[in-house]
Figure 1 (cartoon, rainbow, N blue to C red):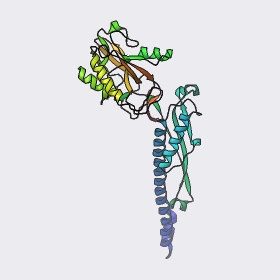
Figure 2: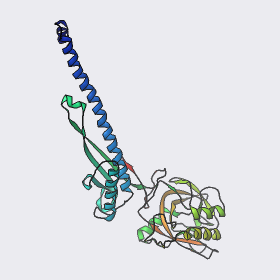
Figure 3: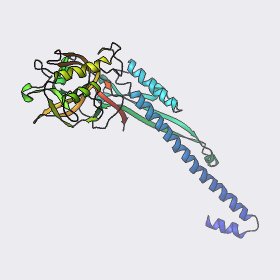
Figure 4: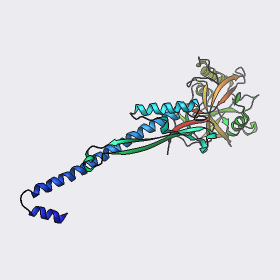
Amino acid sequence: MRKLLKKLCGEQAGSVSIVVAVSMVVLIGISGFVLDTGVYYSKGAKLQNALDSAVLAASQELPADSVSSAAWAAAENEAINYASLNEFEITSDDLEPIYKNGSPANGIIGIRATKTVTVEYNFAKVLGVNSGTVTRTASAGLSPAGGVRGAIPLCVSDTGLSEAIASGIVRGLTIKCSSDTELIGIDPSTASGWFGAVRFEGSGASLYSELLANGYTGVLTVGQVLEMESGNMSGPTLDGFTERVSRCTDGCTAESYLPDCPRQVYVPVIQVLPSKQVKIVAFAAFFLEECGGSGKNSYIKATYLKNITLPDTAPGASGQDFGLYVSKLLG
């Protein structure tokens, strides 16, 4: 190239014009390649964002028993709709289920979307490159909740709840006991004078009753250690329960309830520690059924709810799986 340039420069008039023309073609080609490369990566970033939002929205419809279930159909529709809102068209052929533990027998806990689009080039056509393709993949799924907002100040033991679920006994579970009842899975001798209440912040019957009625505005996390709230607190239990349940005016039941029904509650799943403490190992959802004892020796019974996805996420590492999930992007 150096010899060629010296030769051209040493020739008669017109050689400089040729050099300039050749150089301009090269410069335009390189500039065009740089600009079109930017278009390529911009398109890829937009596609990735569209797929991320699509699978996150779709995962809110999960879990699903199989690809023939209504829940999976709803997840597919949600993904397609969200991608369309971001100006990308996907179909069910672009979507695939993610099974729990990799087995279809365990049900669907996630969704993966893969899409390839064509990027039309402009300047790079000078070099004979008309277009390129960009492929992106996004996956989202359900993980056991590691942090929860809005929990009520009651709890259940991990062993007791596991045994109840394994036995198929999910109705009428005691999540706050009286002197005549027992908390599921907890030996009364390990926590004398304790009836199932825990402290989130501060102590006292009035705060306990308020938290029971309205839920805790802060975040609880797996691994957190809580103090037991001693005493029966029968009156505050009945007051908090009654206030909360009275806000349900739609006739909800454990089998059919609105997503924001106040009778659906989140409860820490715990292990009992020495010195009247408990450690959160997971979270579970319950539907409040009854508060018995007429305010003198109150207890609360509830129905365990499985496969519940939290409407918003809170920080915290996933704990044991008791059917309360958060949806998030998967790597």
